[in-house]
Length: 359
Ligand SMILES: NC(=O)c1ccc[n+]([C@@H]2O[C@H](COP(=O)([O-])OP(=O)(O)OC[C@H]3O[C@@H](n4cnc5c(N)ncnc54)[C@H](OP(=O)(O)O)[C@@H]3O)[C@@H](O)[C@H]2O)c1
Image (cartoon, rainbow, N blue to C red; front, side, top):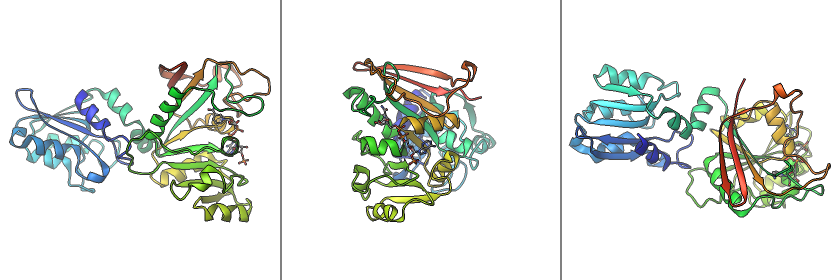
C-alpha cells in the first residue's frame, strides 16, 4: 500500500478535481506484477493501467488501491468491473471514496462478485494525500490552507510596510511546492497593492490546470498595471469586488483579462467566496495573506490547515502589523488550536504546519 500511495502522489498537480489514486497488483507469491497511477488527461484509471501490466498474472492476485474503486459509468467504465473481469481475488483499499456516486458501492459490488475486500490499510496517510478531494466532497466547499511568513515576534511587515523578504530562499522555494498542491491562491487588496505579487506556481512541476489567482478587493484598487493585471491573459485572475466599485476600474482590469465578480458583500462573505470557487471545481485554496484576510478567514472558522514560516529575526515596533488581524479570541479558552503538528526547518527558518482543531 505504501507503494500504491507513492504512485498516487505522482499525479499531484495533474488530477484535480479528481482524486489521486495509485494501484499495485501483487501475485499470489507476493511479487509486484502491475503498477499504475491516475492522471486526469490520460483518462485510464490506476487499476486499469496496473491490470494491463499484470496481464494473466492478475488472476487470483491482490490489488492494493489507495482509494475505493468506482462502480459507476463516468468518464471511464467502472473499475470494479475491470477488477472482477481480470480475476482479482482480493482488494486491499485505504479509504472509502466520499464521492456519493461511489461511496461504499465500489466495495459492495466487489464483495457481491466474491472478491475479498479489506479496507483501512494506511488510512491516515491515504486521507492526507487526498485531503483536498475528501474535504471538498464532505463539506461542499474547498479545502483552505493559510500560509504566512512572520518574524519571531509574529510580525508580517515592518512599521513602514516593508515585508520582502522576512524568510529566506529555502522557505520561499517551499512555498512554490505548496502552491503546486493547490487549485487557487487568494490574497487581500492590501497585499496586492503593498507587494505587487505575481502569485504563480514556480515549482517547475507540471500542472493540469493553471493556478487561479484570487483577490478580495471591494473597491477595485488593483491596478491594471500590477503584475497580476499585466499577466492575467496568461494566468487566470479573479477579483471579488462590491457592486458599487468603479466601472472604469472594472473595465480597465477586464481589458487586461482579469475577471471581475461583483457581489453585494464585495468578497466580505467568505462562505460565498468559497462557494463560488467550489462551483468552478476549485477543490483547494492557499491563502497567502495579508493580516486582514487571514484574520477574517480564521474568525469565520473557514481555515482547515495553517503553515507559519517563522524567520529568526525580530522586527519589533508597536505599529508593525502582526500576522493575524480580524477580531481574534476573547479568551484563551476560545483560541484556535492545532493538531497533527509538523515542524520543519528551511535554512534558518522554521515551518510549523498543523490542522485546525474544529469545534
Ligand atoms: N509575511 C507575509 O506572509 C505576508 C503575506 C501577505 C502580506 N504581507 C504584508 O501584509 C501587509 C498587508 O496586509 P493587510 O492586512 O493590509 O492586507 P490584506 O489582508 O491582504 O488586505 C486587506 C484588505 O483586503 C480587503 N478585504 C477583503 N476581504 C476582507 C475581509 N473579509 N476582511 C478584511 N479585509 C478584507 C480589504 O480591502 P477592501 O475593503 O478594499 O476590499 C482590506 O483592506 C503588507 O505589508 C504585506 O507586505 C505579508
